[in-house]
Amino acid sequence: MTQPVELLRRFTRTQRWVHRSTAALMGLCVATAAMLYLGPLSVLVGRRHLVAAVHVYAGMALPVPILAGVVSAAYRHDLSLLNRFTAADRAWLRSRDRRAGRIPIGKFNPGQKLNAAFVAGSILVMLGTGLLMRYANAWPVRWRTGATFVHDWLAYAVVAVVAGHLWFASRDPVARLGMRTGLVPRYWARREHPAWEAASSNDR
Amino acid sequence: MSAAGSPVGRRVIIGMLAVGTVGVATGAGIQRRLERILAPIQNGDPTGLTNLLPDAGGFRFYSVTASVPTRTAADYRLRVTGLVGRPATFTLDQLHAMPQTALTRDFQCVTGWRVAAVPWSGVALADLLDAVAIQPGAQAVTIRSFDGVYTESLTLDQARRPDVLVALNMLGAPVTHEHGGPVRLYVAPMYGYKSLKWLSDIEVTDRVQPGYWEQDGYDVDAWVGHSNGRDDDATS
Image (tube, rainbow over all chains, first blue to last red):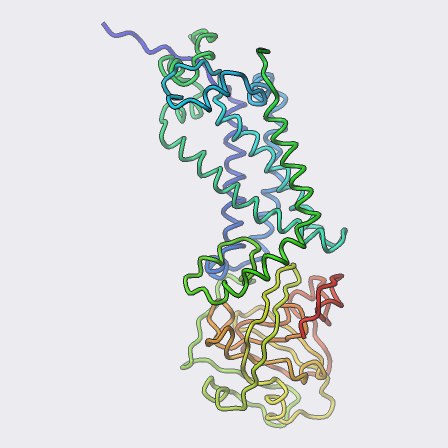
């Protein structure tokens, strides 16, 4: 006799849409950045005005889904979970068997927390330096050069971190299912997020 | 242990904002130093890998149109028209047969990047203008690109400076397509947007016609260090 798989509610519709919209805008920013920045691609695509405009507006829109998500209590709760590092998180980062489910980490593992913080910080710094470049005439020229410097180097870090995020997602189909449908099986939660699993009741 | 834990996320974000702010304040100086170190390596790097470094010197490639046709020695033509006694069309071979001028100068972009000590050579624009016999009343040149969109302009005095070239070679080799080859302009004392790529037409006119970026607010007289609100060291 087979047991039905127990499902836990991991993300609400709001949380998934924030993630989806942020991902789409980030993808647009990275793609247009590559067209503006990498010589051969730049010459191949051309249309510098148009590509730059898409890049600028996608960048300006990037914080909007996150800010809009704050109206949701579930989203605010997740933000506070992402913000806080527990003793279990530190132990998890130090351990060699962090995927064994031995260390009672909560809804998000410390890697996810650092990723979220880095992405949030990046969006703010990229937005700030982007605005400095976009409205360059309003400030001293040195700031524009400095802003370009920061924007360019941070762009490489952002690409590396986003690639890492996609890499981890590519290795965990259940995590992707959770982001796609909002539901994850209990056995997965017990292994990946034991403390969260212990505190969660079934979705149905 | 507090159940909530410490606010590492907030610290990361505040830390990034702090580093970003310091970076904006000091980035101009750091970048200048990096460019000085890396540009010579980059310009001689056959793999092109160092070009992937951000802000580390070397050229960035700007193109304003959807695509730029490729021209070779076989089908390249440079037309010189307008207020001239002998309108002319030059092939690449004919340009190579003219007296060649070589100079080594920095290339400064108005957006801040600079490539140190780039070797250039080609026909001095002054020599080319002499060859077509400029007529009285001529005051300026309008220069066009075979990308079909980009234009530039110089006063006749500017165009006749010895450091303004119809460049056939840069970095010790024929100008590549990405760099605006086979033939581009190089206006040594001015910001990079004056150094039009994929040169196809030079028209001698009775007044300056502002070019592509100039219609967008860039200065028409684009002297490095004395225009566009910038104070870079002069390039020529």
